[in-house]
Length: 189
Image (cartoon, rainbow, N blue to C red; front, top):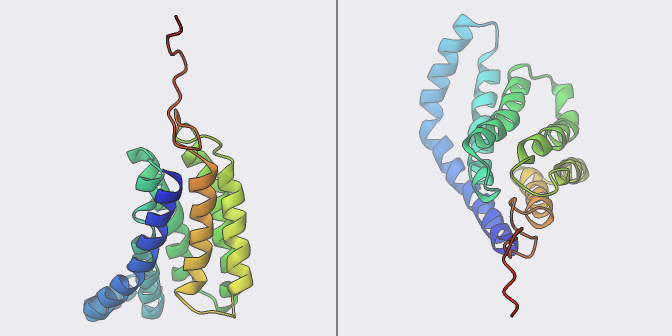
């Protein structure tokens, strides 16, 4: 898949941002009503519920295709979403203004530690997830304060996809896309 997969990754990443922004505009009032109900039951402010909802829908819109392009099994795809969305939503619910400068390191560390486990047995060189997470966190840290959303996430995400799609291959394929045939019959006559 290689370069074609990376092109799809980039295209879907950049196409998701305007789509999710339109979705937010349509669903903000119902989400605000739900957040008010939740805030009445839990000691978490309405603003934190809204931030968690905005972040989770945005992250899901930007990552729904990643397990498909990486050809992860269903269990790996569920783990991919849970590992990325879960900590981010929990961080928004426990939001502190001092947290935002730590966000790049936090997301980079999650991607670096979780992706190798999810890629193991699915793709060659799963340790490339550590490199991809480090690149993601480093790029996000460099862009923090210089650019706003969506660029703060899109550029590191494309770099993460580049490392994973060009640095790994599905088990049974070479990085150049050709299929490995471990016990091919000898056809020389």
